[in-house]
Length: 329
Image (cartoon, rainbow, N blue to C red):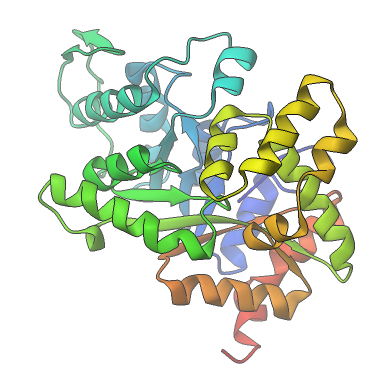
């Protein structure tokens, strides 16, 4: 996963490097005011030849499906058969505070956006009226060169079931820890059966944040602050409560009310950090990656966590083909 923040050397050039280093995919985030992922995918499509280019994750609220389809078309034509559109509902904080849009009926919005997008990308003229989305008389002037897979980001029960029902793949993240993977698979299976298909037809992807370091104490403190930030969003608060951290989230909420950052961070226990995040030296992190594949995950998105270009480069290089194959399984 690229993270094109200034000073990290984690943008376009790193994407070209990833293909040379043997990565199967490059995942392009839509967050924090970074470069637009579909635009970046189009650029990488010209500069690469084989690597899959995936968005992770474009919010469905930001662009109406006809506009999104035109961007997808531009990217896919420059990476024929290599582009994957990752979509999600995002969070109320981002959609309403950052973008000034209404965060209404996210589950319905995702369902309707996927349905309308598939019609448009298939070359149909729109005639769609839903609860959250509508379009009439729009069609693309040309079609993608290949079918564009649509993956959905999912955390909670309803979104996991929706992904199982309508998506080509599902994208989990660190808030679906290994001990909760079985439950997530059950929800996907419920949705898949609803659509008359098997869960094995869905590509299961997990974004995995790695901090490759020799200082595990520093890494734990880094991720403690990371969780505290996520815990400001109601959607993630609900997930953490489901994971059994109701008391911790109550303390976090109280801390945010009085803007006591020390109390917020202190509420995040070592156990929470260690359950969800991956850190340590190269051998330890490669072992964690292997355990994710052993669990049954099809694609693990390596998301290097870094505060400098050197840190990002170390984490990225840890999982290059040369380094992985030089170690025993």
